[in-house]
Length: 127
Image (cartoon, rainbow, N blue to C red; front, top):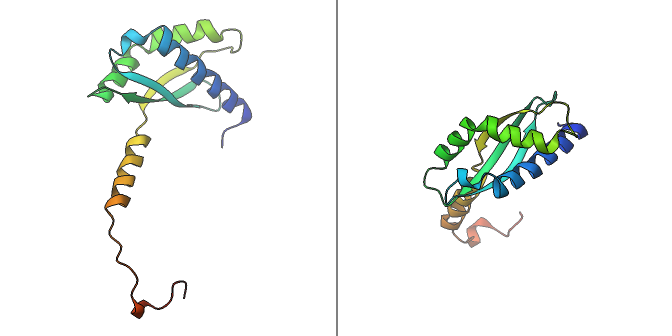
């Protein structure tokens, strides 16, 4: 369970990175639309795992890998923005957030699930 300090720092990083990605580094992504879905910060605040959702890109893993290679540039921009709120700027690790894909697969499974109607042999429902 994350501490209040970690949660506040995570939200700060998420907000600032989202702003950086939309205003300053959107050329990194080409036509892709990138959203920062979550940030998890280590207890010592030295590492931030940044989860990204990528739309309109055929190879989102490659985009995330490319962003990881430019981590120092992104971290520098983040440092400029939060330098008055943080002593140290955490190392950033970018990960692809595939939770939307998993939800979509589960919804498809549920839609294709065939449950036969109850028969009289099964007895009344709830018994």
